Length: 162
Length: 375
Image 1: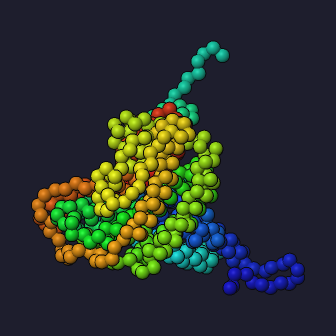
Image 2 (image 1 turned 135 degrees about the vertical axis):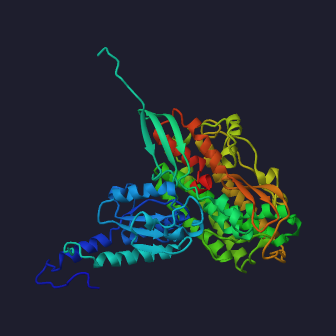
Image 3 (image 1 turned 45 degrees about the vertical axis):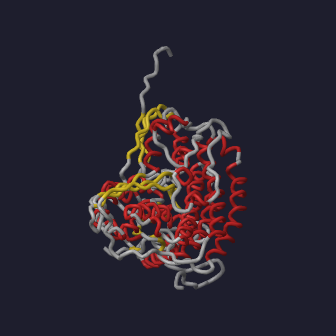
């Protein structure tokens, strides 16, 4: 892994770029907002449980959007809820990421023909990773989290393109 | 100081994004200091229009939607709808005996896992995180068993009109028996860990008392009703499927920690019901006959004109399906009556004059699930 440039000039000195170091820390402490609306919430809970164990990837649930890095949209978003989702997303500090979990959040899923359901959470907030399934298995959610970590590690954080 | 201090009620908002409201439920609280003066629930944040969708899908096509009506106990929802359609078609007697037993086994397993979430979430809301994690671990065993039977972990679509989709795999019955032996011990362990814990009892006892008369007035169902000491269970009083052949008790609240019908009674009824479910499954495992698992049903059914109301006992109480058929391939009208809705309607009454922290205990003990509430 090219996470650190292992050039040890002398003891206790590691040379690396600041981007690498910060991204390593950011990717491995993805705190997610505890925000489950429907069925996917139960699978999210099970993933956080002993078998899936999200915390081994450094992901801990947060109850407040202001301390969260990641929003896991787990479940159907209705039109009444859509406004709240946007408010919650805007309350999160940048850089912020979104995983759209399950068919309902991706596209409305089974309920896209309903009069009260938003067909896809990407209509109100930008989404980084779409995770298919109704509901996705815990393994799928872990895989999505790992993919997001890969994405975060590649990002230029200090040297943003202007 | 002689002049009286001017005070006023403070209106605060709880939800829809709140870690202890179990999904998207919102309360508008008018508080007097720490005490709730008025609590106004705002429902509909998860209204998915399931009843309207039913009018445009086929009778069989609606079964997956019933999974999502109450995802914590999807098997029970499936059972409720399928039995309603079977009653409408007048084919209750054609269901093979083995299918009936399989239905009871899987729905009682699902009842255990649903109560595990209800109890665990109530513990978590009271600040005890460990029991919740224990229950999540045990739930994985049930998920594995049900996955073995039908291939899905949460939304099963296993029970179908006329029986069940496929026969159980050969190892299912022995694995279920193994799980029950293991789980019976775990229930007692978790009871020692949390249910008999003095701090926990102090949080739940004498809070939000629902007297028997009020429970009937507000139409509470299921464990919430039985927590108030009223012995009513659809499985026993209006038996369906093979429940009339099975021997089980109905646990009711007795005011063991304080007053009859308080939060602790409702909580303990669920713990006792887990034990009863274990008893039911054990009997089914002994009595299950060999044979067919599905009656012959056409791929597109057209039930005769008429209407039917069928009720079953799901973990959240008496769930009823009202179906109206015009003899077409899809229902003309479908109405779902669920236990969470009545549970929600009593909150303004019992939450008056309690602490804000106790409102969390009330929600936890009533076991409200948002999609079942809003549909």
